[in-house]
Length: 174
Image: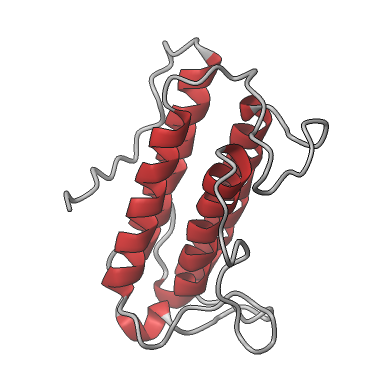
């Protein structure tokens, strides 16, 4: 597996095609997530510093499942046994204790690559397939809606991770 190229640069300001822009910003936030985890030791990746109790690894696993749920199960209509992912006994996000952070990062990268393949060259107006997440064509959103929804979820969660990283070791920005 190739190492991801982590870039702190936003997509080029010359991008005008909405599809390219949405996908470029989604990649930007995928990279931002990994940059914010970079340098944290495993104990910090597995501990919570927020009242709601989630950990940085749990957030990573959650976003891996967001990718699967919206692109494979949602847009492509692929069946999946557990579209909401592994959840802990309390129904919260869950990072398996028997998996290493590197394994979870690799799963995230694989799922992100799958998402890119699923949407590559597809018009923004194309509706999601039925049979996966969406039972009827009337329920199936357009790819543009899905990309925008996933993008805002990343932006929100990466912002949460900004705060968590500052609380853990004082790192801000990037």
